[in-house]
Each structure stands twice: as structure tokens, then as C-alpha cells.
Image (cartoon, rainbow, N blue to C red; front, side, top):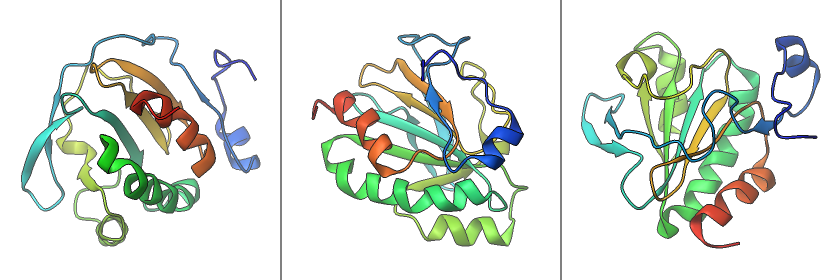
Length: 166
């Protein structure tokens, strides 16, 4: 499938076991991303996303989303395998602030999560469905934007080259 063929309707996502990741049409590969200040779900502040010199994944998710629930263990494994190589994953929960199911999901993964309502990043592509991810390279440039369930193998194929582990 061509990476530019990115438009997937909700019916296609619901019917397919996996969706596709593609380069965003509006936000072309290589566009610099101004660092986003992160406030975690527990109210503590963290550094920024993407952190300088790290490959950053910003993962939008919701507790009600079956593809998000299916994706979370893959992102947890991705974090465990590649954090020491410079991978930074931050989950962005799109549920209302304080949703108990969201808090439980966030506690089950080894990466940080925040509420979407606390994210102020107009320089990033808008999110109309979940799961959606933005991946930034070590230079702070948008490398990929995509949506849907990808599976661990496809996620690794995306981040390994950016980490210099191709």
C-alpha cells in the first residue's frame, strides 16, 4: 500500500484487524516540531516531547477503544526494548480527565501518559480517531503520523531506523 494512501474511514478501521500508518499529507516528513511541555496524569510536570536527541512517539489513545487496548501492550514492549536506545513514548488519553478506566490503563504501561485536555500543541496534526501516533526523529522533526493498530513488528520497523538500529 502506498504511504500517501492514508485516508481510512471509521468503517474500514472497524472492519480491518489492522490499519495503516502513513506519512501525513498536511504535515510533511521533516517538518520541525516545537517541543511540547508535558504534564502527566498525576499532575507532575515532565520534560518536553520530543526530548532533544531522542526519538519521540506521541500516542493518542482512549480507554473505550478496542484498537487502543490491543495496541498498549505493543507500545509497552516497544518502550521496554528501546528506551535505553533513546526512544521516548508519551501516551495522550483522549477520555475526559479523571476517567477511572483511563487511569487504570495508564498505570499498566511503563511509559508516561497525559490528558489530551492538557496538551497544547497546535503545531501537531489534529487527531480525529484513536489510536493515532506522531513519531519525531532525533532532530525534532516529524517523521510519521498514522492511525490504527499496527502491531509490534510494524512499530519496530518504524522506530528502529530512526534510532539508528536498522
